[in-house]
Every structure is written in C-alpha cells, then in structure tokens.
Image (tube, rainbow, N blue to C red; front, side):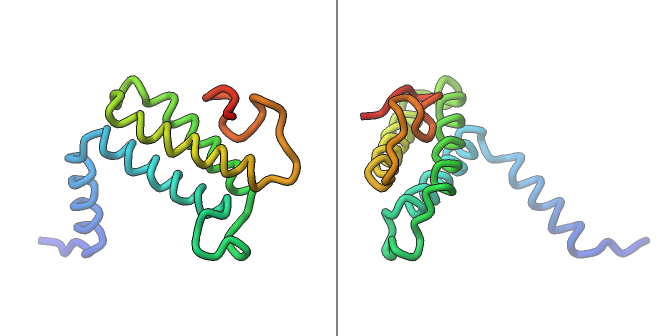
Length: 117
C-alpha cells in the first residue's frame, strides 16, 4: 500500500465537489465575481481614490458582457436579468468615471450589449 499525499486527496475532493455544482451556479458565481471586481475598479467601492482603475475595469466589464451575453440562453432569464442589470450599472458607472468618453457602442462590453446610455 502506498501513501497518497494529502494534496492529491484534497484535489480529488475539490474535483468531485465541482463536478456536483450545476453549470448555472458556476456561471452566476463567475459573473458575480467579475461584476464585483468591475464595480470596485470603476470607483463604486469604499475607497475610490485608491481602488479606481479604469483600464482594469474595461477588461472586467468586457469579460462580464461576453459571459452574460453568451450564457443568457443557457442560464435562463431569471438568472440573466439581474446580471444584465448589474452589467449595465457598471457600464454606466464607467462612462461617468471616464474623462475621455467612448463613442456610442465602443464602451466596455458594448460590442456584446450594444450602446449603453
């Protein structure tokens, strides 16, 4: 009998656990993390002077828009609607925080969502 490292056992447990999580839950979890990070980076957190980074926010918002748009039919409207609402909120916050305005349809994620006003 050979000893298995505890990391191998822990990795197997993690793989088994994630295999039991429904796709809708995983998609929502990733989307909420992207949304939360984007909100911080556009200055909607406790310390906007220290945490605002619009370059990073643009990347996060675009990734979120791609995920939400691609997954909407898979996760259903009850899950997609609040994510789209949150996405729109951070897109608008980005527009307000930016000193250089993007052309309509060229803001973060707008190639997936269309122009946000």
